[in-house]
Image 1 (cartoon, rainbow, N blue to C red):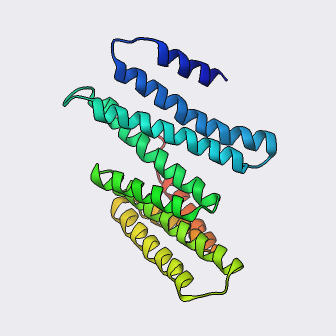
Image 2 (image 1 turned 135 degrees about the horizontal axis):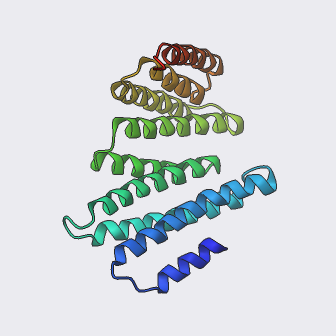
Length: 224
């Protein structure tokens, strides 16, 4: 309620710098989307389909407002604001893709994850960001493969989803490996990827190795 009131106040309130007003509106919608999911968990003990769709709508609006900043900013004008708008747009479409995946709207999820990848690559995001996108794309294809196995007979077309999941998680692993300067983190990345591909046993073993190495790194540091 208060977020909506703040959004309307900003919409009607004239400001000398219009881009900052739009940035504040985009931030409000982004935070509202997060709050909608949290509220659903608190009230319904689960994230409902209605909450997911409501959050998707808010992230879409936040993305459009962020694009408005990107389109209207003059060269050299508020570079930090444009940078924040790009990052927020990236995060909006990543989260939209994830939520569409949870709704089993596979094509919509794929579209937004592909858009996230293009944003990340075109605007030179970090290898970790790019790797994260490929990790979620791999999970999407794996979830689609599992869902199809439970509803239709296994066929060659569905088998392609599993192949795509393996290819994309392999790319994710490569990107994350290149970006990480801490050996322990590599085991955590591999644990995530193994979990996404359904190999829970391997994921647990890798997570244990990560924890052991992480604890050793902490205990090996000087407190003085």
